[in-house]
Length: 414
Image (tube, rainbow, N blue to C red; front, side, top):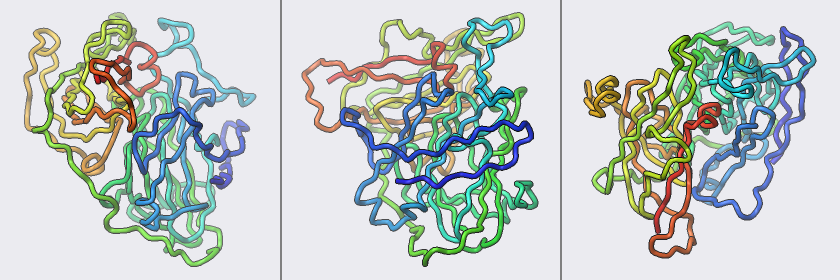
C-alpha cells in the first residue's frame, strides 16, 4: 500500500529532515500472527535511530465493513525527536546519570510523523482512515484537532473540527465507533480512527499536543505541534466508504473464568540526592531473576498492576490481548512497607475506548491498581507436550524503562 507523501510545515530551528515515507512492507514467514484486524509494530531500544516499523493485519470481516481503504487508509507513526544544527538525531546523555548511553526518559523537542517533522497532509473532502501508533520512547500525547490557518496556527475550538471516530484499539476493531475530540496515547498504544472531512472543503486543521512530560508530572519539554490536515485536494470521485454504526461482535471475558489473580507491582528506586530514577522493577524482580508467572496454556487470569511510582507506565504483555476491568486507588505506603493491599475509594470503570476493546497495552496510573483479564492462548497450530514452556515477556513500554529492568519474562505452560 502506497503512503501519501507528507509535506513539511515551516520549522523555527531550520532543521532539514525530509525523508521519503516508505510503504508498509509485507511481513516474512516466521512471525506469529495472533489476532485479526489489528495494528502491530516492531520496536527496539534503537527505534530512535529508525528501527521502528508498522504492519497491518486484515481479514474478510473487516473488508466487508466498507471502511475507507487504498490511498484513503493511511498509517501515522508518531515519534518525538531532537536534532542537531546539521539535522542529525540527538540522544543526549543524562547529566550525572547512571550510564553514558541511557537516561531515565527521552523527550524530543520536535514531533515527527512518518519520519517527517511537524508535517502536513493534503486531503480530499471525504472520509479517511488513519492507523495511529505512538512510537515515541517515553512521550504520552494528548492529541486535539483544531481549526487552523494554512501555516498551522490554531484559530478555533476542538468542537469546530471533525471528530476522531475511533474504530479500533491495539488488538483489533471495536464493536462500535466512539467519537472523541481528544485522544490520550501512551507509548506503544495504537488507535484506529476515521476522520470525515466531507464538510470541510477548503479548511485546515492542526493536531496539537499538550500532555505533560513525563506524564502526568511534567517538568520536561512539551512538543506541541504534531501535524496539519489541509482539505485542499479536489474530490477524485464519490466517497462510497462508510462509518458503520456497528463493526464486529465483541465477547467480553468473564471474570468468573479467571483461575488466578496476580498482583504485580511497579516500583522505582530514585537517587536520594536529586530523585533521579536509577532503576525500575516489575514485581520487585530483575530480568535475570527466576520466572514467577507461569500461566497454563488456554487459561484465563487477571493481572493487577499496582503502580507505586510517580509515573504513568504503559504496560504491554506479549502474546496475549486483554480487556481492561477497572482501576482503583490503593495505599501505596502500606503496600510498600507491609505488602498489604489496602484499597481506597470505589473502582473506576475503564475509559469508553478501553472496554469494550481488545488491548495489549494499558496505562497504569500512579497510586492505582489497574486490572486486566486475559486468556493465554498459544498461536494457532502450536504443538505442545505436557509441561512444555513457551517464553514471552511483559514490560513497560517506555523504552528507557524497559531497557533498565522494567521487563520480565513469563512462561506459558503447555
